Length: 261
Image (tube, rainbow, N blue to C red; front, top):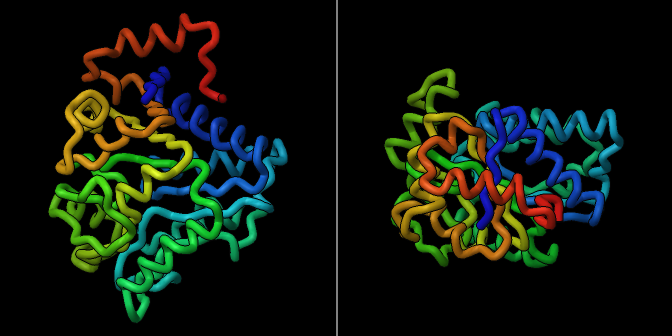
C-alpha cells in the first residue's frame, strides 16, 4: 500500500482522475471498477472534462460498479445506475452496453450475484478499481464482519450507512435496507486499486484502514493485503495518520517513485 497526500480535496481528486486516465491511455480497453458517492462526483466531473478537452477515449472501456441498492429500478434517481449515467456515462463516449451494475430488481438476487462475478471474469477481471471509504470503514457495501474472501452478494446495511446515505433520498425512510455489493475478495482480485479519501470527517477511519490491524470489522483494512493499492488523500483526511511525515517524504524525495506507473 502507498499513501499520497495532496494539499486539498481538489488536488487529490485531480490526481485520482489523472491516474485513471493514464491507465486508459496505456490500455484503451481497460476494465474499470467504479464507485459512487459524493466524493466520486468530482472525479467523474474531471474525467468528463478530460474527455471533452483532452480527448480521453472511453469507447473501448468496460466498467463494473461496486454495488446497487436492492429494490430500486435503474430509472430511480437514487439508484446507482442513474447516478453513473448522470455523473459520467452520458458525459463521455462510452458504450452503455459495456457499463455494468448489479440488477437490484432481479427476480433471483443470488443468481444475479453469481452472474455478476462470471461477467467480471469473462471480461478478464478488473484492471483498476476505484474506491471510497464509508464512515464505518466499508468498501462497497461490505459492512462490518464482511469476510475478507467474500464475493458479490446481498448485504444488510448498517444504521451508520443508513444515516450517511438516507439524506440523499427525498424521503429518507425510502432508502433500501439491503444492497448487492462486490465482495472484499472480488475487490482484492483487481489488478490495481485506487482509494480516494477526503475530508477531516474521514480521518479517524482512514487511519484505522491504513495503519490499523486487518479485520473483517473494517473491510477497507483488507486493502493492506493488495500488492498495488494506492491511497490518495487530502491533508484533512490525513490528519490522524501516524506516519504522515513518512508518506510526505516518499512522495517528495524518492526520485524514482512514480504514482503513474
